[in-house]
Length: 160
Image 1 (cartoon, rainbow, N blue to C red):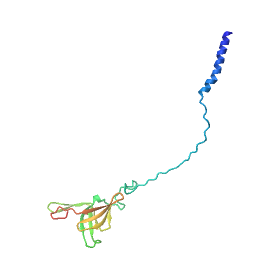
Image 2 (image 1 turned 45 degrees about the horizontal axis):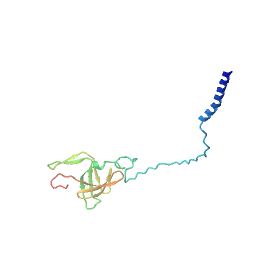
Image 3 (image 1 turned 30 degrees about the vertical axis):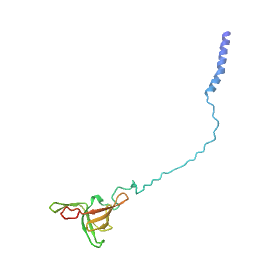
Image 4 (image 1 turned 90 degrees about the horizontal axis):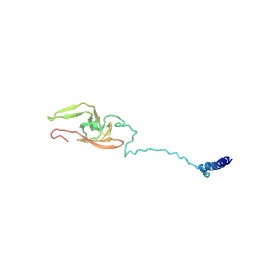
């Protein structure tokens, strides 16, 4: 009987301790918080490409809208000058002319264009025709760059 009393005492003590230990492991419930209101904001990115800093990446990399050869491909081979600016004509080509040391010329095959003031081909527009040079505007990435085209001559006494 002593043994059953001991076992009963131990079992009773163990039963009293079990609910306390289970409660000690559960964290206390936090006090109720008021609901948080969230404002949803929708933002849209807007892209702008200033022409003076960089070109628009959505435009084609072609010469000009009219098409044709670019400035780098053209060579001035002749000028028909008149005192009336509207009558002067610049002759440009995609080919060229080679001047040999004996003074003879040898043509390089290419297309020839006859341009008056205000006319253009590719990315080039003629602005002025002088006796020894032709002033043009070259369209490069939404910018107009002034350039001068002159006839190269290797003949003695020829214009530079």
